[in-house]
Amino acid sequence: MYHMRLQMGAPDINSWKSFGHAEIPRSCNQFCFYEAENRVTLGTKLLVRTSQNNGNPISLQEYLMDGPTVAFSIIRNDSVLYEYYGDNYEESSILSSFSVSKAFVGIALGCAIEDGYIKSAEDLVITYLPELKGKKGMELIKIRHLINHISGLKFSSLSFMYYKRNLNNVKGYVSVSEPPGQRFSYKNGNTQLVSIIIERATGKKFQDYFAERIWNKIGAEHEMKWSVDNKKSNTIKSFCCMAGLNRDFAKLGRLMLNKGKWNGDTIFSEAWYNEMIKWDLRERSAWDNEYGWWLGPKDYGYYYAAGLWGQYVIVNPKKNIIITRFAKLNTERSIHVHDKLMMIMDQL
Image (spheres, rainbow, N blue to C red):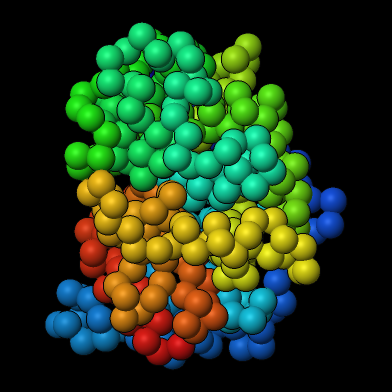
């Protein structure tokens, strides 16, 4: 495992090139956002306060050009109000998203429940992963505990999960640390088990179910490249490692902005939408993390999918705004990035 890590290197925005991946085809009915007039000028009008320039505000364009951001967009009413690409990236560039994928898994879980493959998020994990029955304490853990990171499970290290060659062998990397519902503990393995449960329940590879129920329906303009553990197992690393176009990721935001509907079709119900974004403190769940989504301050009313190095898909229903951001690395603390994003939303 250590030698594999040295060979492939630490995760970065081009990591998808280092792994085998499933190619999830673009949509048969592609959807394109409109191009708003004067898209460039908004970047000079919006102001961001940073530690640079003696604390005086600088333009959004300057802020993006001086930092690690490689793609950034603001979308309202299906129109791209502003878009930025830096460091030789462009609209057609493939971008890694890392844990943004967890939000897609949350949506897929809702689809599997509404399709009748899974009875409810309250179902026991061992119903779908019977090989874990022998592990003491597993009989208490529900799917909801996994998706909300209160499972009490212990997994092998982050690098083990990221570089692991057989994620289907769940018995080999899962153990019980404490009873479920004791505390929030964000672990990639939780999301990975949810996607494997969806596979077992539907009888389809997760990537095929995802393509059928979500990706093909939201008008994706390009195939999604999603890393897998190995060619034989072909198991998606669902906790990370989706790579695609900036604007296709924005369609995840559009789907959420429309509460599960897409151009008249219902992909998931409004009830599931509300479940994903509600403030839920049951069994010590984190108030700001539900079903793969992070919740912003109540006053702002936004929620977002987030990934390593500052990858974001942000949805603000109050202002009907979608913001995407992809970066090479995050040199700012996430709380500071959020401060700037809220400054931007205040001006829209």
